[in-house]
Image (cartoon, rainbow, N blue to C red; front, top):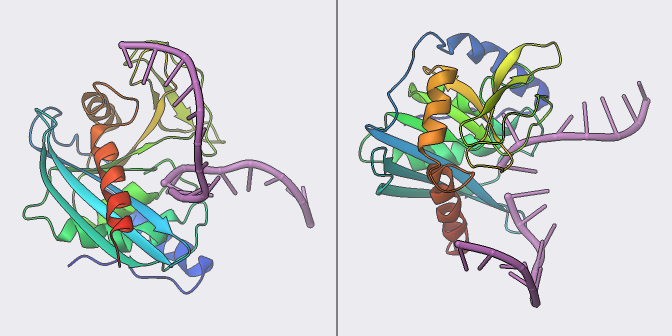
Length: 225
DNA sequence: GCGACAG
DNA sequence: ATCTTGTCGC
């Protein structure tokens, strides 16, 4: 059972990130797109009841058919702090992932990986803790910048940190639609992560894995007692 | 010091 | 993330 330590404060949370960061593996290409099992994970919150629901949805990468679905519900254990999202989301996400009958070949997160203030975003954290290849697909540029990519599906541009470092890619998944922001998590290359993001988004801007996980965790939250 | 800031 | 109706379009 994989676990994430809940820090007592923000300083401890940053210290944990700085420590775990060394375990990120960046020299693997990762699983090929269009084959095997891809899991999408996402969470939904109910601040009123202090509840968080997570979903893990496994897709057949070749057909994008749903192979397995798991959910988990827990208490919100950490506030939302930009840069510390993993401590808020991962405990429940890992519970959902652990309930799967078989580990997926890749986990797609709703957020960032290497593109992060300390180079250790949600997707990196999840990858290091589970050992699985992981990547992040975010819906907003966060603090990063990029030159507008071409208007066609598949067009992309480097996602840049303030110091000019390339930390990910702004990827157009649909013609004429705002791009998504892809970054590496663990054990996958940026090129391959983008290929996966594109293959998972044949029809909508957001990857099917994330869309299915999003709707499932919302449903789990509604049906939570 | 202030503002901005994945979800 | 979440609060929220109707509405434009395939």
